[in-house]
Image 1 (cartoon, one colour):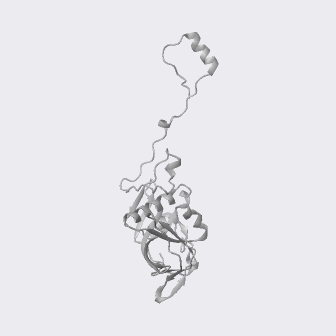
Image 2 (cartoon, helix red, strand yellow):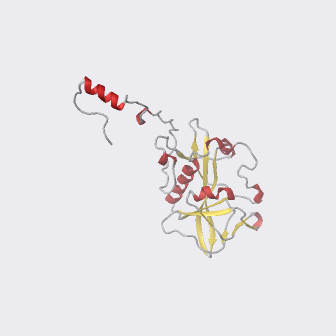
Image 3 (cartoon, rainbow, N blue to C red):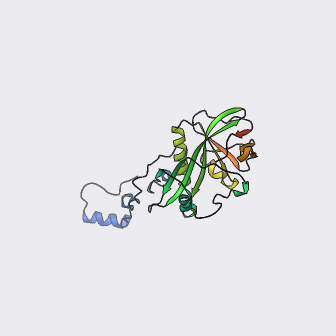
Length: 235
């Protein structure tokens, strides 16, 4: 790339010729002129995204980094901050299943403190192809309607998976509706093609009607072939 400026003085005639040849230099906002990023809550604990998880700042470095925090609680009130009121916010009532609450929660807040994204975690015991495993269940993933498309799901799920790795888990598991399979594939999850049976109250067993997906959390982690029996209620 050639330099538009030269060192040393120029005569008035050469400067005039230069202006006629190149035209006036136009100036515009430079990267340093960008509006400062909005402040994030100072009590939020930042989590760096896992390298395999796309992050909004990877493509647009001038946008503010998504700050994910560990939540002390996640009740119906916090859920309604994100999704609003409703009897079936996740659209899974049709399954007729009873689900466990999550135990560990991560969230993203807007500049005004409103919760706009969430992911929950809960360890789950299961048997896959005759092999007993404990996996980290991932659930309650949601993003406020007015904030979708901005990478918040990638950020909050990525932070939750990073936390699962620190706890020593080698596999993550989730259940989702068919339209969300593509989203979770983009987060590194893979479909479990075998039938999955889950426990229900009063000792009943039920075949999981939702899609089951898993993600490796450590090098060399695989998923055993064969039917899957969740030895607890789903989350």
